Amino acid sequence: MSGVQTLIVAEGEDGMRLDRWFAVHFPGLPFGRVQKIIRTGQVRVDKGRVQTNTRLAAGQEIRVPPIEAADKPAAPRVNPEDAAFLRDLILYEDKDVFVFNKPHGLAVQGGSGTKRHIDGMLKSLPDKNGETPRLVHRLDRDTSGCLLVARTRAAAAHFGKVFRSRSARKIYWAVTVGVPSPRQGKASCFLVKQPTRDGEQMVVADHGDDGAQYSISYFSVTDQAADRFAWVTLKPVTGRTHQLRVHMNLMGTPIIGDPRYFDLEGYEPHEEFGEGLHLHARRLSLPLQGGKRLDVSAPLPPHMLKTFDALGFDANRYDAQDSDPEND
Image 1: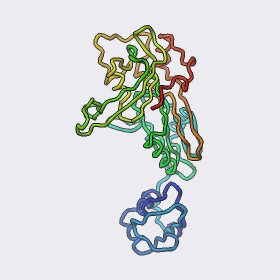
Image 2: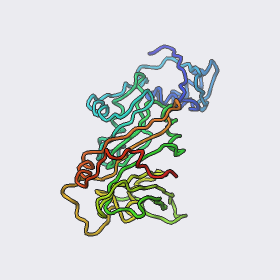
Image 3: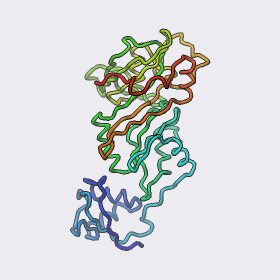
Image 4: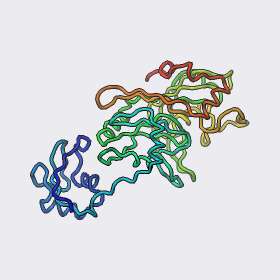
């Protein structure tokens, strides 16, 4: 058994319920046991008695009574191969955050039939306290590019607020069949999710339909190959599932390689093009906890580079910021 411990409530735990705090720090401790040690006064916060639903404040001292070894949290299972794989993807890191260049075809989270995904591999990158990084936002399996992951609870809370407030600037690059008209503008519609046998499909809906959510994106044609193909820079304002893919298809210029929303009749893929969805989370810009602004770009994945070469597009010709769509 361990002796009595005095632990400090971290900044990221401010406002957390005491029973939830125990679930985080002692995941092997049964809930009934947590209730008992709190009810009997064995747990103290700043030397005072508390209840299971007591809200904690950062900096408070929690007295934890002796905990049996079997109740202690198991050390994170670190897979060296997963850790090495993720570290090869890092575009930026500091004490609070990782930004990975997510590969095309790799899922961010698990699902039906999905065994290998970013979320599952994150447990192989614990910090010195054993804390596992947390997803803050997500990309589709077939979308590549900048993926932000928080390294602490406090960072996850901060970046969660940033994304909810829409103060994060996200820039995507896509290759479309056809050239959007006008060359620069705004796409918007109401979308609703419909389940399918292999996931979910977003369907255009009317305002007021059950579950319908408004979606809005800005777009700008960066370059084009005659009138047949375009390199389009996209800025999603809302964060609806698949919204960029739906918006481009609604304009009659679907994204190359889209297995779900591409519906142009008679289109034959070119042999010199890369295979896969041509949608890339090129750039991410957002405020860090200390007030500075993170601004990171991800290089194109191999299949999009192959298509860029075939169409004569030069990814190095245009700076990501220079080719951004207009701000809303």
